[in-house]
Image (tube, rainbow, N blue to C red; front, side, top):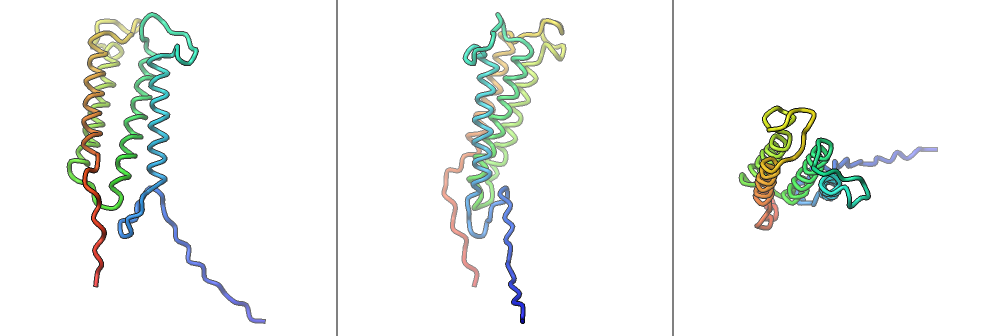
Length: 167
């Protein structure tokens, strides 16, 4: 009895790498980015207004709330960058979009260092009494504005050109 050998060609497609030749949209990367954005927004709200989730809110925004806000903002920025980057799958990223991801990271660093100025010893309060003051919250808002500019730089305004057929 002759055994028939079947050759199966397995195509291993990593979801993080788009297929530039066919222009397939990386759905996994876009879904991961949107999931991280939603998770970051919920975490950001948890740190900013814990009363919305039935948690105890103190008089001022303390160290744990600052850390929760920063973690949420980081997840939000990372998820938005992944989502906007997935729209560049069919072609190479433009220089402005590539620069925009660095602007987002710079804005996040500004948010971290201004929010934790008291913890680093640059603020007016010393280590046991850390809270988010007026100047620090303005610095965080400036950093968030820079993140917004970086995200706007990553938006794809022109549709992708179809790949040219080679003879």
